[in-house]
Picture 1 (spheres, rainbow, N blue to C red):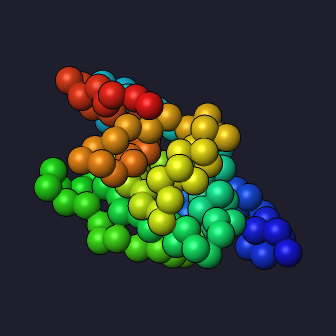
Picture 2 (tube, rainbow, N blue to C red):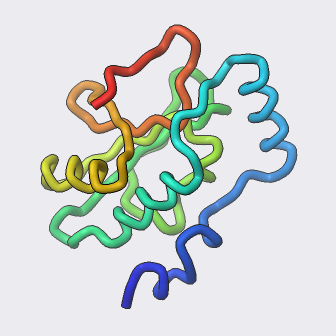
Length: 136
């Protein structure tokens, strides 16, 4: 059974922001506080790839929301289907797998840009003024 069949489709079950937070996010982008990097389709491709990962890869993630306090990020988690935040609010998502080569190939396959932050793969949803990751 494919991930799409198991979970009812590629995009429709991904968590979405409520209207108030969508307006708040749009205002942050309009004011130049955030610069979008990844779109909803790329986030869905990444999520589907992690859901379909071989069990030995055991992908894990932690994330930072654009609405979070400056020093906050989530704890490490491995539940991509239920626990991944609405992607529209993700400033970044860090990934760990058993094989760095497998992860890099998965990201290349979907043309998902990333950086390495302290040796950890970071997928950027947004960057901020004065912050330009070293893209890989």
